[in-house]
Structure formats: structure tokens, C-alpha cells
Amino acid sequence: MSEWIAFDCVGKSVEKTIDLLFKSFNLKFWLKLALVVFLINGSVGNSLNLRFYEFDSGNFDLMQYLPILIVITLLLVLIVVFFTFIGNVAVFVFLDSVLKKSVKLVDGLHENLGRGLKLFLFMICLSLIFIVFTGILFIPLILILQLLSGGLKFALILVYGFIAFIILFTALIFLSVVGLFTVDFVVPLMYSKGEGILDSWKSLLKVIKKNQGQFVMYVIARILLGIATGILSAISGFILVFIPFFIIGIIVAVISESGNLLFSNPAILVSSGMIIFLIAMVLGYLMSIILLPIYVFYRYFSLIFIGKIIPELEFFKGEKEADEPKVKKELYVEVE
Image (cartoon, rainbow, N blue to C red; front, top):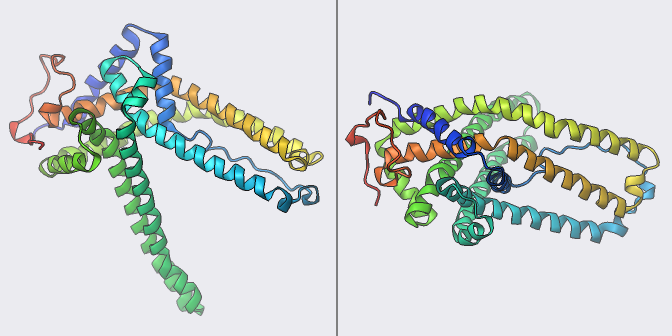
């Protein structure tokens, strides 16, 4: 190949992003599409790391409130699972909205429940595989700690720790690429062909096998683009998230230091948590509004790329520019 498709897709993706969001600016469309992105991003409290300082445990009877704490924990788990599921459904809603240039949130969520469930279960399986793999990887380390002693123990810990780190890092990269390809390519296949996620992956693997270099360059392009867009995201995140939560953290610390107010009454503790959660929701949505062009760009980028690799998946037929680079025919692969 004389050209790399991924880099050819950048300019067209920027053009289509500008056309969708800025040419005929529609605030209502922007806000609704940002809400879809917010749902995709899911858990908004992951970066929250408030540090509570020492408090008088005598004012807080753990056993007395243990059933309440268990119920609250279970509810939080259910909420996280629910919103994670909705986020996976929203991936298809976002794709549909970008293609049709119209956001139908409620109808879109309802129509894509089945696809979203398949994506959700697949992602859960990926996470479980990584967790189990990590656990197995640490078994030899535990045995070394339990059975050996002295200098040999220290040396083996260093050697095996380094090997385990390399293996774990490689596995993490591999699963990250799998997750990336699932959202960028498998989701469009499921959307356009009505296939299940495993059948879509089989189709994609056939294409990857014939175009390995193109997909490697796609990953490299995504990394380079991620560095550029990550700087903007980091600046926005610092302004909208870290500074407010830093202020909240100071307030919470002052309250907890003066009179142990938070921990003396579980109702106050729960109320404070709910307020912080709501603030996090608002800030997360504001982030989605500000960074919406980046999300739209990446969605277009993957669609244009896969459309060039698989002609029958060309999502923008009739919109090709006259000077669009030609791609050799042998690049294309029939997707069954």
C-alpha cells in the first residue's frame, strides 16, 4: 500500500464534525447529543477521591448502622450496573444520532436495548477475563511469599514481579485494543448488518487478517490523536472537575474535623454523599457539552475508516469528495 487510510480520514472527519455541529448550529441538538455522550461515559464519580481525616469512632456505631450501609452499598452497585448498561445502549444511540443528524434519546434507547445488552455482556466478560487473569498471575507471587525466605525470596520476587508486570501490561494493551475495535468497528457492523456481537467480531477478524497494516496504523493514529485531544480534555477536566472537588474536599475535611458532624449522623453522611454525587453529575454533563466535538470526531473517524476498508459499509455514500484518495481493490474483503 502506498497510503495509510487512517491518516487520510482525519481531514474528512474534521469536516464532517464541523458540518454536524457548527455549520447550522443547533443548541438543542448539541445539548441532547451531549447527554447521550454523558450516558456513554457512565460512572461520573470515579475520579472523586475525597480524603476524610481522623474522626472520633465513638460517635459512630458501625454495627448499629451496618444493615443500612449494606443496603446503600448494594444500591450503589445496582446503580453503577444500570448506568453502565444504559451507557452501552447509548453507544448505538450516539452512532444513530451522528448518522441521522437527529437525536431521539428515549426511542433510541428503547430500539437498541438488545444490541446494548449484547455489548454490555461482552464488555463485562472482558473485564472478568482480565480480573481472573490478574488473579492467576499473582498466585506464584503469593506462593513465593509464603514458601521462601531470605535472599532467594527477594530475588524471585523482583524477577517474577518484573515478568508479571510485562505480561499484565501486555494483556491490558491487548484488551484495550479489543475494547477500542469493539466500539469503533463491531458496533457499526452490528448496527448496519443486524448481526450479533460475536458474528460481527468474526466478520471484523476476517477483514483485519487481510489488512493488518491498516489496522495497526489506525491504532497508532488513535494514540497520536488521543495525545492531542487528551490535552484539551485534561485542561477542561481540571477546570470543571478537580478544582470544584478540591474545594468540596476542603469543606468536607473542615466539617469532619470540627465536631465529627458527618460521622455522628448517617443521615448527614448520606445527604452529603448525594449532594456530591449530584454535583458530579452536573460537572460530568458540562464536560460532555464542552468536549462533544471530540467525541463526534472520533465517531466519524472510525466510520470513515471502516467504510473505506469495507465498501458495503460506506455510511456516507454520495458525500465523497472528487479528490478523495483511491484505495487499491485488493484492500477490500467480502464480509459474510
